[in-house]
Length: 457
Image 1 (tube, rainbow, N blue to C red):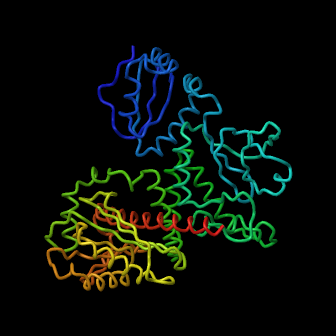
Image 2: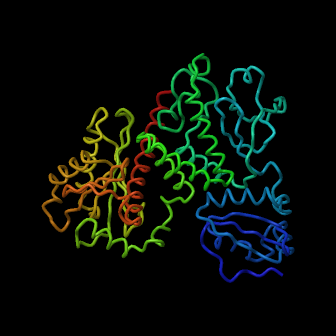
Image 3: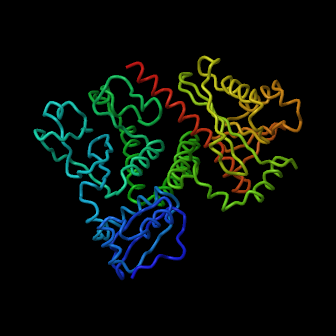
């Protein structure tokens, strides 16, 4: 008889109901304790199939994972490997989700219930559409068998689409339904390379081997992650980064570094989980931070700032707040740039800081971290000196700027501190603040551009 385990972790993970050694059902959960509690309520209140499964099960095992994304991928691997009896009984084949990758010069990625093909309306659409087809349920439609590879099965379409959306920010790919003359919105906001879906590329005779190779590398990287091979992928990317640094191709090295960090962020959900505090207790980090900044002042609130725009359009600014080393999203603030025209990040930063510190009712930070270098630091210092807060020494914040390319922290006393040489806990703290402010600014910028694009259509 199955007994409820005494200790069930609250972390994301995989759970397996077994009869002796045979898996009966495999599932995933964002919170194992919360999810498994539903199986141990009053038996008669559960669906019949679950009642039968529980009657057969003799063991319950759990595997903790770093995030729900990792749990999603691990669940798919185990279901594919064992094909548990009740996974098949509780879900027919159409309830599973698969990721399809088309076999063409610029592969497309799509999610489907039907891994053998998709329905399209007519042969004219087949000729004019590139490869991304809508699924229709009209009985007069016909089915085509197109060449594609599939990864799955996945049980949660929502979690799968969320994972793909996050991966697309790290490894851009195309989803346009047909070729077009002008770059799509996704290419303008960094989610699509842009050269893969324009008429110029589709009909041009020019060769673009480098572009095609880079695009396919993105697709292979996504496939590796969804297939559970991220460790090898991250290792390869780190080796590539070291090689391009040796050749002094610093922009390429910075791109690879950002991709590695973004990939780790997708897998670990570092912007929403508070696990770093468990690894690096805040009192310990605080002591190292005070030593780095040469201050004895207590630091509890840190604010991070960033600007996001494309050629000055839809410009936005962000303020994120970290309390005792962890993000407090209830304190986040976003700013739509109102007074600066053109692409002038420094002037935009000045506007954001001026508007922020006019809010005396908001809690004041002890440390401000700007995404940028000396120019952004000088602008921040000039703006804060003009604010009333600067006349109150008790409320005057320590100001710093983190240069993304070199991971160098610029401070108001003129120091340039290479964080790579500091304690890893400090490097990770500043990276999280900088990258969270960048993410928050970009997300608001994307929303404004999408609204503008929709209004123009």
